[in-house]
Each structure stands twice: as C-alpha cells, then as structure tokens.
Amino acid sequence: MTARLTSPDGMLQHAPYHHVAVATGSTHVHVAGQVGQVGNEPVAADDLAAQVAQALRNTATGLAGAGASFSDVVRLTFYVARWTPDRIETLMAGVQSVADEVGLPMPMPPASLIGVEVLFEPDVLVEVEATAVLP
Image (cartoon, rainbow, N blue to C red; front, side):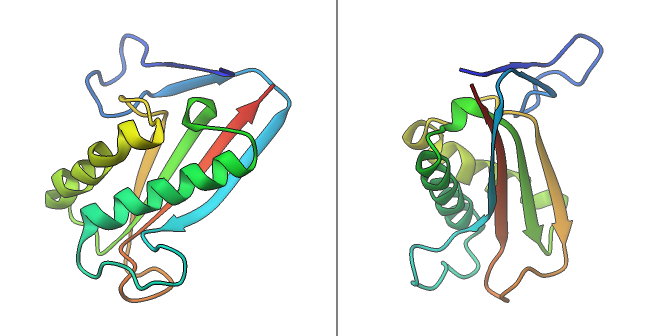
C-alpha cells in the first residue's frame, strides 16, 4: 500500500471519507470519469445507486488494468448530475453496496462530490474519477 489515509483532529470526523492521503511512490494512475454502464449497454436510467455501484466497478477495472487497486487510491471525485443534498443517502447506498466487492475501504480515500447540471448523456447520473499512486 502506497497511501496512508487519515482525518486529523480538528477536521470533520465520521465522514464517509478520509480528508488526507499521504502517498509514497513514483507512478501515478489516473482513471478518467467512469459511469454506471456495462460495456455498451445503456445505463440504469434514474437509478443513482445502481449507477454509482457500476461506476465504482468500472473504476476498479481501470485501476486493475494499471496494476493498482482502491488501496492505492489517494483521491476520488464524484460528479453527480442534477445533484441535491437529499440524494446523499442514495449515493452512499450505491457506494456501500459495492465497497467489499471492489475493495473500496470505508471510510473512502479523500473524495469530493461535485454537483453538475448534466453529464455527457442525459441518462448518465454519475461519473467517478480516481487518482492512485504506486511504488
């Protein structure tokens, strides 16, 4: 593991993610925005939890293709279309439903959730980006 995750005293505690990642290594892996789509199949329209789960599966596949895993991730970014704060439980349900399957530690690595009006296709509700560091 090249990343040490922490949430120092004085920062919001009990968040679903760590606030700080300290990484050692020289190889950086950047996984572009992954969506809740399996291959060329359409996304599960209007199902944020299902799209989040599949986007994280796709992110895990991208990481594995570079020889990395979620234990090497130092940053996650979630872009969510038509975001409203009342959707956080649905988003987190999608995360939690797949965390063990893909090896996503809970709390997660440092993460940001950015609400956007629309993503690249109208039915796409979420994109997930990841940054990892390898030795």
